[in-house]
Image 1 (cartoon, rainbow, N blue to C red):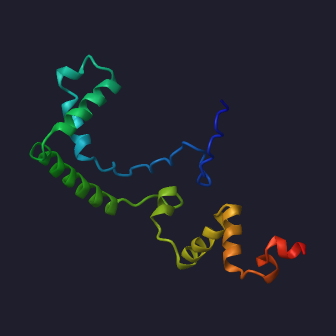
Image 2: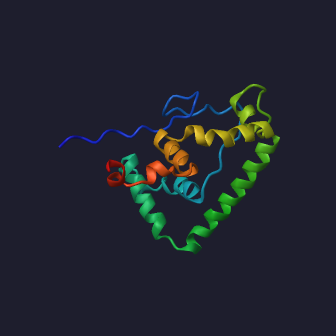
Image 3: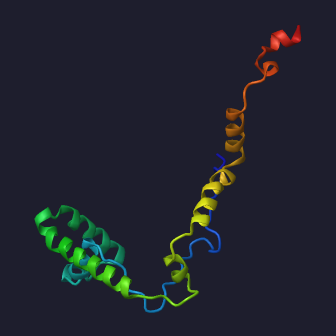
Length: 152
């Protein structure tokens, strides 16, 4: 059997596939989820020492899913506190001018927002643009006639 052709994913401009933008120097750490905080402490247990990283992750995930809401509550609260910490640090953080994070922090101008709306039609695949063009055009009388009528 022939293998299906690989789907091409739309790549964001300016970045090669699989590459993330570097974090600005001095930028605050990201927000830790309740699961992440719990794993950080739970992974220290002796039962996970002989396991590989992947095996330990599977075991931790299964154990987290089996915990009750009451058992997860302290970790959820810790995550909320970490989210507040992150918000405070982000407000105080001023990225260096010209850095990618400084440009991302700027809200888009009205002109940029208008330009973004126009791109949707241009980015559509050709077949979609053709269908949209046909839908907006009225049917001509010649095209609506049956093939038998045109042959006579």
